[in-house]
Length: 238
Figure: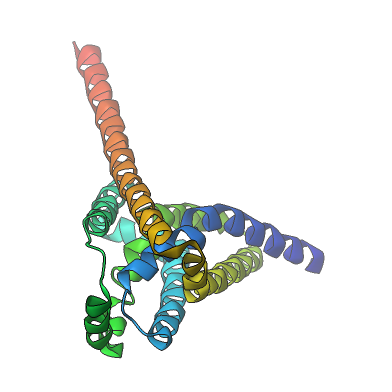
């Protein structure tokens, strides 16, 4: 029995790690984090990175364990979650694409304005949601959470334990990417950083549009299925 539980933990750990890590992708979101915290001190960025990693862990844990029940309670479908979250993600990416480069004077003013209270307000929105973990990752977390349930309570708990360990590891990787991402950007210089940030923002915009389209497509498929069913009923009645 102990071996079976260990296998359940290991399988759920690998499943969540292989499923969630490519979607959360800390290396890809680190440049966005650095761009949105321009002017913040290293101490503030470290504090933000820690809070974002913690917020991501709890948000993904909640989505994985109780997300499906919450959506059912409010009558919200996954396509609606995708559309709403995708619109937010696209809006943030659009603002990043239109942002003007900062000068030394503006960096100094930003450093004065970016206080710890400001960082605390931005830690969840938009830096945790939708930048670090957006609607796609929430939808996947809800789907994975459903697959963790088992007829035996002990096995379900073991699977959930493995999933939490995987989320904790992803949180550590997210913290490290945000904490030390500035060193990578420093290597490629100001021009390379500007190009890299614009490219990342454009990819983020495309991802937001893609998420919206997936939600719309699923709603259209549901509508088509309902219309086909109604047409079948009408033809059968006649």
